Image (cartoon, rainbow, N blue to C red; front, side, top):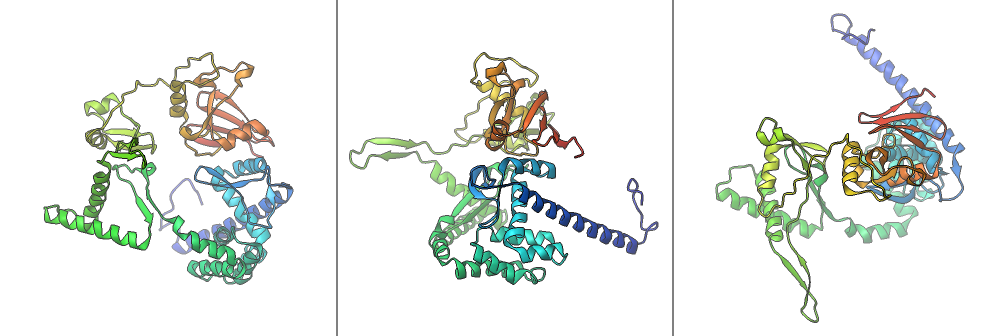
Amino acid sequence: MDLGTSTTATAVSTASLLSWIADDAEVRDHLLIREWMNIVAWAGANIVDSPEGAATLTEGYLDTGVPIAGPGAPLVSEFQLMELIAVLGRSPDGGRAYVGRIIECAWRLPDLYAAVLAGKVEPWRALRVAELTHGLAAEAAAFVDHQLAIAVGTVSWALIERLVTEAILRYDPERAEADRQKAGDRRHCDVRLDEVDEHGNVHVDGYLDAADGRDLNDALARRAEVRRRLGDSDSLDVRRAKAAGELARQDLALDLLIADPNTGEVIATDPGRRVELNVHITDTALTGTNNVGRCEETRSPVQVAQVREWLQAPKTTVIVRAVINLADCIPVDSYEIPDRHQRHVRLRDHTCRFPNCTQQAVRCDLDHAQPHGKGGKTCPCNLTPLCRRHHRAKTHSQWRYQVIAPGHYLWTSPHGHLFHVGPAGTTILDGH
């Protein structure tokens, strides 16, 4: 079949198409199982004896220090894992989780792993089970493995999760009690300001004490009803969302004074509302011929009308910075990097420049590509944003890179694989 042209229903029957799709799915599954087997063999060849230098998981932007597979599975080399993940073409955090779950299956869930190799269980199901068992004691993981190896393809996820809970209660009662005691610590109320959509809205989610949740629900319902009686014709959901904003502004409008309980002296003040957003707009946006800007915090487009609404909010402070010419390259004599160079590099590259890494540049170190002590200049053309993990890899392992043009980097892995990292992402250059 010619993949360069579309296939019409008159040229090929639906039955034939379904047959080809089924054949391709079978080939895909075989290739994935072979990838699992090769990763397991790789893990066996790259074991380290101590936690120092071992690959660990990350949570948010912090290294947890927790090995990528559970107790009883081997510790694998962190720097060697970086190369494997790059060859797989996966992101650093996603790749280490993926490899860790395969190791979890092979060493701690051997019955389930055997079922995957035999084609009795889909790999994605086994990966999900491995995610659930990662934190279990070895005996608890073995219990789950024995129960699920045959039935995992048919039971629901709710039953699997209950089975994991049962394993904890059976084999790790101290953890079960600690989990019960600490359940309250999981309470949160998150406003996802780093996920502002193109309409200027954000998602809010929370996990509250039941009594607090009821009070919040009643307050939102009461305020939504007041808005309706005052003539607000929006839907109930929209009025509840507006009510949440009213509750917040009522609190933040207050300038709070914090006094010493003994002397009464004011020792701190809370000035109320403070939100900082960096928004990029052009002269065409200001004149009305273009209606799109960009919010730096979310790396997403934003309508100029939304920016105008933000700027009109009471007590808003606006700072206008000059346009940074990304083609400029003006070095300074010192090792310290001036603010204007930091902004330049982070606006140019946006993320860590290690292959496939998506860590935002504002959270990265700026590395002198050619060390300053060896004549490297402190200027944008010699500065590269690297997250802390990949900065360590460049400094303490055999990973190396060259700047081939501003914003374009050629990385060489410890075993000689080549990767081009640029504005379009990461490209594997060699055919190893």
